[in-house]
Length: 392
Ligand SMILES: Cc1ncc(COP(=O)(O)O)c(C=O)c1O
View 1: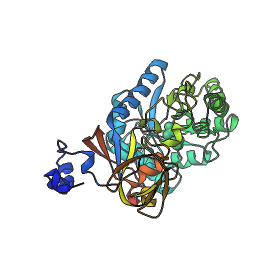
View 2: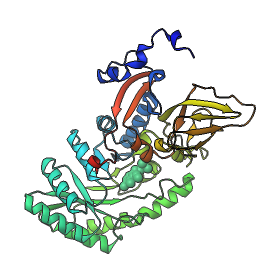
View 3: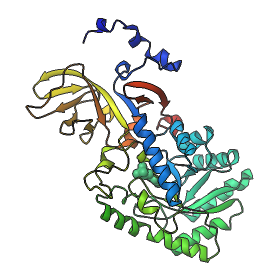
Protein backbone atom coordinates (compact mmCIF):
# COMPACT_ATOMS: atom_id res chain seq x y z
CA UNK A 1 0.00 0.00 0.00
CA UNK A 2 1.66 3.22 -1.08
CA UNK A 3 -0.03 6.42 0.00
CA UNK A 4 1.92 8.33 -2.63
CA UNK A 5 0.27 6.16 -5.24
CA UNK A 6 -3.10 7.63 -4.33
CA UNK A 7 -1.66 10.97 -5.42
CA UNK A 8 -4.13 12.47 -3.00
CA UNK A 9 -3.05 12.13 0.64
CA UNK A 10 -5.00 15.25 1.54
CA UNK A 11 -8.27 13.40 1.27
CA UNK A 12 -7.30 11.38 4.36
CA UNK A 13 -6.53 14.56 6.30
CA UNK A 14 -9.77 16.42 5.81
CA UNK A 15 -12.32 13.63 6.32
CA UNK A 16 -13.84 15.46 9.31
CA UNK A 17 -14.14 18.77 7.48
CA UNK A 18 -15.85 17.07 4.55
CA UNK A 19 -18.29 15.38 6.90
CA UNK A 20 -19.05 18.68 8.63
CA UNK A 21 -19.69 20.25 5.20
CA UNK A 22 -21.69 17.14 4.25
CA UNK A 23 -19.54 16.92 1.17
CA UNK A 24 -19.54 13.18 0.55
CA UNK A 25 -18.69 13.26 -3.16
CA UNK A 26 -15.23 11.77 -2.81
CA UNK A 27 -15.59 10.06 0.55
CA UNK A 28 -15.10 6.29 0.45
CA UNK A 29 -14.90 3.55 3.06
CA UNK A 30 -11.17 3.59 2.41
CA UNK A 31 -11.02 7.13 3.82
CA UNK A 32 -12.63 6.30 7.14
CA UNK A 33 -10.87 5.88 10.46
CA UNK A 34 -11.34 2.49 12.13
CA UNK A 35 -13.07 0.98 13.98
CA UNK A 36 -16.18 2.61 12.50
CA UNK A 37 -19.84 1.64 12.21
CA UNK A 38 -20.96 1.33 8.65
CA UNK A 39 -24.54 1.04 7.41
CA UNK A 40 -25.17 -0.55 4.03
CA UNK A 41 -27.95 1.73 2.80
CA UNK A 42 -29.39 -0.70 0.25
CA UNK A 43 -29.80 -3.52 2.79
CA UNK A 44 -31.03 -1.12 5.46
CA UNK A 45 -33.69 0.37 3.17
CA UNK A 46 -34.80 -3.08 2.09
CA UNK A 47 -35.25 -4.05 5.75
CA UNK A 48 -37.38 -0.98 6.39
CA UNK A 49 -39.52 -1.68 3.34
CA UNK A 50 -39.92 -5.37 4.20
CA UNK A 51 -41.29 -4.50 7.64
CA UNK A 52 -43.45 -1.61 6.36
CA UNK A 53 -44.95 -3.84 3.63
CA UNK A 54 -45.58 -6.61 6.14
CA UNK A 55 -47.38 -4.20 8.48
CA UNK A 56 -49.47 -2.78 5.64
CA UNK A 57 -50.47 -6.26 4.43
CA UNK A 58 -51.32 -7.64 7.86
CA UNK A 59 -52.97 -4.47 9.16
CA UNK A 60 -50.73 -4.03 12.18
CA UNK A 61 -48.94 -0.82 13.14
CA UNK A 62 -45.23 -0.40 13.77
CA UNK A 63 -43.90 1.62 16.69
CA UNK A 64 -40.30 0.48 16.33
CA UNK A 65 -37.91 0.36 19.26
CA UNK A 66 -35.08 2.89 19.07
CA UNK A 67 -32.80 1.39 21.73
CA UNK A 68 -31.08 -0.55 18.97
CA UNK A 69 -30.17 2.36 16.69
CA UNK A 70 -30.54 5.45 18.93
CA UNK A 71 -30.89 7.62 15.84
CA UNK A 72 -33.59 10.18 14.99
CA UNK A 73 -32.52 9.87 11.32
CA UNK A 74 -33.51 6.21 11.34
CA UNK A 75 -36.72 6.80 13.32
CA UNK A 76 -37.79 9.45 10.79
CA UNK A 77 -37.20 7.10 7.90
CA UNK A 78 -39.48 4.55 9.54
CA UNK A 79 -42.15 7.18 10.18
CA UNK A 80 -41.96 8.18 6.51
CA UNK A 81 -42.79 4.58 5.62
CA UNK A 82 -45.85 4.50 7.88
CA UNK A 83 -44.68 3.87 11.47
CA UNK A 84 -47.01 5.45 14.02
CA UNK A 85 -44.25 6.47 16.42
CA UNK A 86 -41.33 4.94 18.29
CA UNK A 87 -40.82 2.95 21.48
CA UNK A 88 -37.99 3.90 23.84
CA UNK A 89 -36.28 2.27 26.83
CA UNK A 90 -35.38 5.46 28.70
CA UNK A 91 -36.89 8.86 29.31
CA UNK A 92 -33.79 10.39 27.69
CA UNK A 93 -34.46 8.47 24.47
CA UNK A 94 -38.06 9.71 24.60
CA UNK A 95 -36.91 13.32 25.01
CA UNK A 96 -34.44 12.96 22.17
CA UNK A 97 -37.01 11.50 19.78
CA UNK A 98 -39.73 14.03 20.69
CA UNK A 99 -37.26 16.89 20.35
CA UNK A 100 -36.47 15.63 16.87
CA UNK A 101 -40.12 16.12 15.96
CA UNK A 102 -41.31 12.53 16.35
CA UNK A 103 -44.87 12.01 17.55
CA UNK A 104 -46.22 8.91 19.24
CA UNK A 105 -43.27 8.18 21.51
CA UNK A 106 -43.94 5.37 24.00
CA UNK A 107 -41.70 4.73 27.02
CA UNK A 108 -41.59 0.95 27.57
CA UNK A 109 -40.54 0.96 31.23
CA UNK A 110 -41.82 2.89 34.23
CA UNK A 111 -40.34 6.35 34.87
CA UNK A 112 -39.99 5.46 38.55
CA UNK A 113 -37.53 8.00 39.97
CA UNK A 114 -38.64 11.52 40.91
CA UNK A 115 -36.31 12.78 38.20
CA UNK A 116 -37.99 10.58 35.57
CA UNK A 117 -41.53 11.33 36.75
CA UNK A 118 -41.00 15.07 36.45
CA UNK A 119 -39.42 14.67 33.01
CA UNK A 120 -42.20 12.37 31.79
CA UNK A 121 -44.84 14.89 32.80
CA UNK A 122 -42.87 17.79 31.31
CA UNK A 123 -42.55 15.82 28.07
CA UNK A 124 -46.30 15.12 27.99
CA UNK A 125 -46.90 18.85 28.39
CA UNK A 126 -44.64 19.67 25.44
CA UNK A 127 -45.74 16.69 23.35
CA UNK A 128 -49.23 15.37 24.22
CA UNK A 129 -48.78 12.26 22.05
CA UNK A 130 -46.08 10.98 24.42
CA UNK A 131 -47.14 7.92 26.45
CA UNK A 132 -45.66 5.73 29.15
CA UNK A 133 -46.34 2.30 30.61
CA UNK A 134 -46.91 1.39 34.26
CA UNK A 135 -46.87 -2.03 35.88
CA UNK A 136 -47.78 -0.91 39.40
CA UNK A 137 -50.70 0.98 40.95
CA UNK A 138 -48.20 3.01 42.99
CA UNK A 139 -46.64 4.27 39.78
CA UNK A 140 -50.04 5.34 38.48
CA UNK A 141 -50.57 7.29 41.71
CA UNK A 142 -47.21 9.06 41.47
CA UNK A 143 -47.83 9.97 37.85
CA UNK A 144 -51.36 11.15 38.59
CA UNK A 145 -50.09 13.47 41.36
CA UNK A 146 -47.32 14.91 39.20
CA UNK A 147 -49.59 15.29 36.17
CA UNK A 148 -52.26 17.05 38.26
CA UNK A 149 -49.66 19.50 39.56
CA UNK A 150 -48.72 20.48 35.98
CA UNK A 151 -52.27 20.30 34.65
CA UNK A 152 -51.28 17.57 32.16
CA UNK A 153 -53.08 14.51 30.85
CA UNK A 154 -50.60 11.63 30.45
CA UNK A 155 -51.29 8.79 28.03
CA UNK A 156 -50.66 5.58 29.98
CA UNK A 157 -50.67 1.88 29.10
CA UNK A 158 -50.41 -1.05 31.50
CA UNK A 159 -47.43 -3.35 30.99
CA UNK A 160 -48.12 -7.04 31.49
CA UNK A 161 -45.59 -9.78 32.21
CA UNK A 162 -44.92 -11.74 29.03
CA UNK A 163 -41.95 -13.95 29.87
CA UNK A 164 -39.33 -11.53 31.20
CA UNK A 165 -39.50 -11.04 34.97
CA UNK A 166 -37.86 -7.61 34.73
CA UNK A 167 -41.10 -5.72 34.14
CA UNK A 168 -44.83 -6.19 33.81
CA UNK A 169 -47.79 -6.82 36.08
CA UNK A 170 -49.26 -10.27 36.51
CA UNK A 171 -51.87 -10.75 33.77
CA UNK A 172 -55.60 -10.99 34.45
CA UNK A 173 -57.18 -9.44 37.52
CA UNK A 174 -54.02 -7.70 38.91
CA UNK A 175 -53.37 -5.96 35.58
CA UNK A 176 -57.04 -5.15 35.21
CA UNK A 177 -57.02 -3.44 38.62
CA UNK A 178 -54.09 -1.26 37.56
CA UNK A 179 -55.87 -0.42 34.30
CA UNK A 180 -58.98 0.59 36.26
CA UNK A 181 -56.86 2.75 38.53
CA UNK A 182 -55.29 4.49 35.53
CA UNK A 183 -58.67 4.92 33.91
CA UNK A 184 -60.15 6.54 37.01
CA UNK A 185 -57.16 8.87 37.48
CA UNK A 186 -58.19 12.31 36.30
CA UNK A 187 -54.85 13.22 34.76
CA UNK A 188 -54.04 9.86 33.18
CA UNK A 189 -55.71 8.49 30.10
CA UNK A 190 -55.67 4.74 29.70
CA UNK A 191 -54.59 3.86 26.17
CA UNK A 192 -54.24 0.09 26.42
CA UNK A 193 -51.74 -2.65 27.22
CA UNK A 194 -48.21 -3.79 26.48
CA UNK A 195 -46.62 -7.25 26.74
CA UNK A 196 -43.06 -7.70 25.49
CA UNK A 197 -42.12 -11.32 24.99
CA UNK A 198 -38.35 -10.87 25.15
CA UNK A 199 -37.65 -14.57 25.66
CA UNK A 200 -39.61 -15.57 22.57
CA UNK A 201 -37.73 -13.08 20.37
CA UNK A 202 -34.50 -15.09 20.22
CA UNK A 203 -35.97 -18.59 20.50
CA UNK A 204 -34.35 -20.76 17.83
CA UNK A 205 -36.62 -22.44 15.27
CA UNK A 206 -39.86 -21.12 13.84
CA UNK A 207 -42.16 -23.66 15.53
CA UNK A 208 -40.53 -23.31 18.94
CA UNK A 209 -40.58 -19.52 18.64
CA UNK A 210 -44.23 -19.48 17.66
CA UNK A 211 -45.12 -21.73 20.59
CA UNK A 212 -43.15 -19.58 23.05
CA UNK A 213 -44.62 -16.34 21.75
CA UNK A 214 -48.19 -17.67 21.94
CA UNK A 215 -47.61 -18.90 25.49
CA UNK A 216 -45.93 -15.69 26.63
CA UNK A 217 -48.55 -13.34 25.25
CA UNK A 218 -51.65 -15.36 26.18
CA UNK A 219 -52.01 -13.47 29.48
CA UNK A 220 -51.76 -10.15 27.69
CA UNK A 221 -54.56 -10.99 25.29
CA UNK A 222 -56.73 -12.46 28.04
CA UNK A 223 -56.35 -9.23 30.00
CA UNK A 224 -57.24 -7.19 26.93
CA UNK A 225 -60.44 -9.22 26.60
CA UNK A 226 -61.25 -8.64 30.28
CA UNK A 227 -60.62 -4.91 29.92
CA UNK A 228 -62.87 -4.65 26.89
CA UNK A 229 -65.57 -6.55 28.75
CA UNK A 230 -65.22 -4.11 31.65
CA UNK A 231 -65.71 -1.22 29.23
CA UNK A 232 -62.16 0.12 29.53
CA UNK A 233 -60.63 1.90 26.53
CA UNK A 234 -58.12 -0.24 24.62
CA UNK A 235 -56.64 1.88 21.86
CA UNK A 236 -53.38 -0.06 21.65
CA UNK A 237 -52.08 -3.54 22.40
CA UNK A 238 -48.35 -3.38 21.86
CA UNK A 239 -45.43 -5.82 21.96
CA UNK A 240 -43.44 -8.08 19.69
CA UNK A 241 -39.91 -8.04 18.36
CA UNK A 242 -37.89 -8.71 15.24
CA UNK A 243 -38.00 -12.43 16.01
CA UNK A 244 -41.78 -12.58 16.43
CA UNK A 245 -43.03 -9.85 14.08
CA UNK A 246 -44.77 -12.32 11.76
CA UNK A 247 -46.16 -14.33 14.69
CA UNK A 248 -47.60 -11.41 16.66
CA UNK A 249 -49.11 -9.73 13.63
CA UNK A 250 -51.30 -12.78 13.06
CA UNK A 251 -52.65 -12.57 16.60
CA UNK A 252 -56.14 -11.42 17.10
CA UNK A 253 -55.87 -8.43 19.41
CA UNK A 254 -52.32 -7.10 18.92
CA UNK A 255 -52.51 -3.67 17.31
CA UNK A 256 -48.83 -2.78 17.05
CA UNK A 257 -45.27 -4.10 16.97
CA UNK A 258 -42.23 -2.77 18.81
CA UNK A 259 -39.62 -4.54 16.68
CA UNK A 260 -36.28 -2.73 16.54
CA UNK A 261 -33.30 -4.90 15.55
CA UNK A 262 -34.63 -5.70 12.07
CA UNK A 263 -33.28 -2.38 10.77
CA UNK A 264 -29.70 -3.71 11.07
CA UNK A 265 -29.80 -7.32 12.33
CA UNK A 266 -26.93 -8.90 14.30
CA UNK A 267 -25.30 -12.31 14.42
CA UNK A 268 -27.49 -13.47 17.34
CA UNK A 269 -30.66 -12.79 15.37
CA UNK A 270 -29.29 -14.32 12.17
CA UNK A 271 -28.98 -17.64 14.01
CA UNK A 272 -32.60 -18.03 15.16
CA UNK A 273 -33.83 -19.41 11.83
CA UNK A 274 -36.64 -18.20 9.59
CA UNK A 275 -40.06 -19.65 8.88
CA UNK A 276 -38.80 -20.85 5.52
CA UNK A 277 -35.14 -21.49 6.40
CA UNK A 278 -34.07 -23.03 9.73
CA UNK A 279 -30.38 -22.25 9.14
CA UNK A 280 -30.56 -18.46 8.89
CA UNK A 281 -33.06 -15.75 9.79
CA UNK A 282 -33.00 -14.13 6.39
CA UNK A 283 -36.25 -12.10 6.56
CA UNK A 284 -34.00 -9.08 7.11
CA UNK A 285 -30.46 -8.56 5.85
CA UNK A 286 -27.34 -7.72 7.87
CA UNK A 287 -27.06 -3.97 7.23
CA UNK A 288 -24.56 -2.99 9.92
CA UNK A 289 -20.85 -3.78 10.05
CA UNK A 290 -17.89 -2.61 12.05
CA UNK A 291 -15.09 -1.61 9.72
CA UNK A 292 -11.64 -2.47 11.10
CA UNK A 293 -8.02 -2.48 9.90
CA UNK A 294 -5.39 -5.21 10.19
CA UNK A 295 -2.71 -3.48 12.27
CA UNK A 296 -0.26 -6.36 12.75
CA UNK A 297 0.45 -9.66 10.98
CA UNK A 298 3.33 -11.39 12.74
CA UNK A 299 2.00 -14.92 13.32
CA UNK A 300 0.76 -17.64 10.99
CA UNK A 301 -3.01 -17.95 10.54
CA UNK A 302 -3.58 -14.94 12.76
CA UNK A 303 -3.75 -11.18 12.49
CA UNK A 304 -4.54 -8.27 14.77
CA UNK A 305 -7.32 -5.76 14.11
CA UNK A 306 -7.82 -2.37 15.73
CA UNK A 307 -11.11 -3.22 17.49
CA UNK A 308 -11.09 -4.69 20.99
CA UNK A 309 -12.98 -4.33 24.25
CA UNK A 310 -13.73 -0.65 23.75
CA UNK A 311 -15.34 -1.44 20.41
CA UNK A 312 -17.26 -4.24 22.20
CA UNK A 313 -15.73 -6.87 19.97
CA UNK A 314 -17.06 -10.31 20.91
CA UNK A 315 -16.14 -13.88 19.98
CA UNK A 316 -19.67 -14.17 18.58
CA UNK A 317 -19.01 -11.41 16.03
CA UNK A 318 -18.55 -12.62 12.46
CA UNK A 319 -16.25 -11.55 9.67
CA UNK A 320 -18.29 -10.56 6.64
CA UNK A 321 -17.79 -13.14 3.89
CA UNK A 322 -15.51 -15.29 6.12
CA UNK A 323 -17.75 -16.91 8.75
CA UNK A 324 -15.06 -19.53 9.48
CA UNK A 325 -12.66 -16.90 10.86
CA UNK A 326 -12.56 -16.83 14.67
CA UNK A 327 -12.79 -13.52 16.53
CA UNK A 328 -11.43 -12.74 19.99
CA UNK A 329 -10.36 -9.62 21.82
CA UNK A 330 -6.98 -9.05 23.35
CA UNK A 331 -7.30 -5.73 25.16
CA UNK A 332 -8.98 -2.38 24.90
CA UNK A 333 -7.96 -1.64 21.32
CA UNK A 334 -6.90 -5.02 19.92
CA UNK A 335 -8.79 -7.89 18.37
CA UNK A 336 -7.42 -11.16 17.01
CA UNK A 337 -8.64 -13.00 13.95
CA UNK A 338 -7.52 -16.62 13.47
CA UNK A 339 -8.13 -19.08 10.66
CA UNK A 340 -7.22 -22.57 9.49
CA UNK A 341 -4.17 -23.19 7.33
CA UNK A 342 -4.70 -23.20 3.60
CA UNK A 343 -7.33 -20.48 3.35
CA UNK A 344 -6.77 -16.88 2.33
CA UNK A 345 -4.52 -14.90 4.72
CA UNK A 346 -5.11 -11.34 5.79
CA UNK A 347 -2.32 -8.84 5.17
CA UNK A 348 -1.16 -5.82 7.12
CA UNK A 349 -3.38 -2.85 6.21
CA UNK A 350 -6.33 -4.95 5.03
CA UNK A 351 -9.78 -3.65 5.89
CA UNK A 352 -12.05 -6.21 7.58
CA UNK A 353 -15.83 -5.84 8.02
CA UNK A 354 -17.37 -7.50 11.08
CA UNK A 355 -21.00 -8.21 11.90
CA UNK A 356 -21.63 -7.32 15.57
CA UNK A 357 -23.49 -9.77 17.81
CA UNK A 358 -25.44 -7.44 20.07
CA UNK A 359 -26.71 -4.28 18.42
CA UNK A 360 -27.84 -2.46 21.56
CA UNK A 361 -24.40 -2.69 23.11
CA UNK A 362 -22.29 -2.13 20.01
CA UNK A 363 -24.14 0.95 18.81
CA UNK A 364 -23.72 2.38 22.31
CA UNK A 365 -19.96 2.81 21.89
CA UNK A 366 -19.90 4.62 18.55
CA UNK A 367 -21.04 8.15 17.90
CA UNK A 368 -21.97 7.97 14.23
CA UNK A 369 -23.05 5.70 11.42
CA UNK A 370 -21.20 6.05 8.14
CA UNK A 371 -23.85 5.28 5.56
CA UNK A 372 -22.55 3.70 2.36
CA UNK A 373 -23.70 2.52 -1.03
CA UNK A 374 -21.02 0.07 -2.07
CA UNK A 375 -17.72 1.75 -1.23
CA UNK A 376 -19.07 5.31 -1.41
CA UNK A 377 -20.05 7.15 1.79
CA UNK A 378 -23.36 8.89 1.10
CA UNK A 379 -24.38 10.13 4.53
CA UNK A 380 -23.43 10.28 8.20
CA UNK A 381 -26.05 9.83 10.93
CA UNK A 382 -25.21 10.69 14.53
CA UNK A 383 -25.92 8.04 17.18
CA UNK A 384 -27.51 10.33 19.71
CA UNK A 385 -29.24 8.30 22.41
CA UNK A 386 -26.19 6.66 23.95
CA UNK A 387 -25.88 6.13 27.67
CA UNK A 388 -23.69 9.08 28.64
CA UNK A 389 -24.68 11.29 31.57
CA UNK A 390 -26.60 13.64 29.30
CA UNK A 391 -28.53 10.71 27.87
CA UNK A 392 -29.70 9.26 31.21
C1 LIG B 1 -39.67 -3.53 25.50
C2 LIG B 1 -39.04 -3.91 24.21
N1 LIG B 1 -39.80 -3.91 23.09
C3 LIG B 1 -39.27 -4.23 21.89
C4 LIG B 1 -37.93 -4.56 21.75
C5 LIG B 1 -37.40 -4.80 20.36
O1 LIG B 1 -36.93 -6.03 20.16
P1 LIG B 1 -35.98 -6.39 18.92
O2 LIG B 1 -34.86 -5.40 18.90
O3 LIG B 1 -35.54 -7.74 19.28
O4 LIG B 1 -36.82 -6.29 17.72
C6 LIG B 1 -37.13 -4.60 22.89
C7 LIG B 1 -35.73 -5.01 22.76
O5 LIG B 1 -35.07 -5.40 23.68
C8 LIG B 1 -37.69 -4.25 24.14
O6 LIG B 1 -36.93 -4.23 25.26
